[in-house]
Length: 574
Ligand code: TEU
Image (cartoon, rainbow, N blue to C red):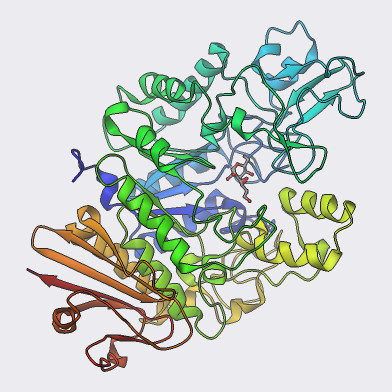
């Protein structure tokens, strides 16, 4: 059992992607007043924290993850007064508000970068990563980029600035130049901005690609990728040499003297269990938890667009290892999807015949693991991936850039479109489906992104009216985490690790044990090899992905039987 119990052990976080959540002024784009209008939905669900994806002034090159002013609200989303009202209304309902902190990079329209780019002698030149062309090559010549690093959004991670003949680093889009955290002025400017928001009353931060802020010097080429022009620079910027120093300094400068119930979660691509123990050990005062990416990469082959079938045994191995690795020290975040990942029910479940059952199964399995669960907007309604027609259907910079890069390298259009249909971040960005009306109650105007055609059946209005809906199942799971300490604090034990279709585990605290058993397939199955099966057959059924009125199938020779995509939660006391 970990030394220290923290408030967020029994909390559930709801992620709002404001652009697609609720529009209040008819411009077809979600906004802060729209979030205010829907706070009762979050309150009814029972969540404790809302994480707001970026709402700061931004050219929206990467939908707000390219910030040009950290201490204001983009007019598309509203005003600081709207924000203060949202904060007050959320707090009124006992819901905390966590902001998105995007400080690995700024927008290229941020005054810091405008100043830095203005001249090689600019006092802010060293706030970013500027480098001359590769030795012996002229600026702009093929291969003249200072290193061969690939950008996450395709192409080189370096952009030439014609005026100075130098290149600047951008791990994401060229309109997202990386900040140079080696420069203490940069760090202090960021800390001051964070304190400004905390003084305003926000309750913490989700920190964007925060494990990329420390770069290993000198910057050097990475291993070439697929024989192409670019290389993998990640060994030079994933969990770099000063990352723990920077996060501990941030904690001292921003959080140390702030009592109360703040939450910090670091988004950390490629982070390992061992890293996460260091990052989330309360004694080290870095972050409360991290977003790790292992389980959302198990269906990736060479790269995220090279889709492979997901194998349940691998999913259990990965999530089980994270549970065991942070059992004594540290804390896990728990998520199936977010604004960067395809919809959970389409990816891990069955978004056709068993959409409701599999959405409830996924919620059951995730929410009863040990850690803090995150619900991505629309997940509580069982929203599904988008039926993209053609290349023009995609808006996300990562997807659009990949389409052009891949077809440019000769890949077949239909193959590329199929990969995008499965993996595009746009799958998560269709407007939330509030009702069955033409624009699903999202806007009275023309939505910036088409509403999913299945909104007629899949929507909040229907879900709230149906006690057996995915929504009410999430509400019950969140209630269980609030009321039963075994959910927040119980020890986790994985069972049936090698079973290709059954996911089973227990949570134990004092004399109480919960058993979660789930059938990740569209066929009815008897569960082989369940320890104490006979005793569990007598146990109390707490929750299930099938209506309780539908009863429980009779055991098969003492083995519990699960219907397609059925999950069951049982409790017994010793
Ligand atoms: O995402 C970082 C990140 O790892 C993702 O870009 C990921 O590589 C990719 O989406 C998987 O397909 C964060 C934000 O969540 C994302 O929305 C931003 O685009 C990115 O950082 C840059 O700020």
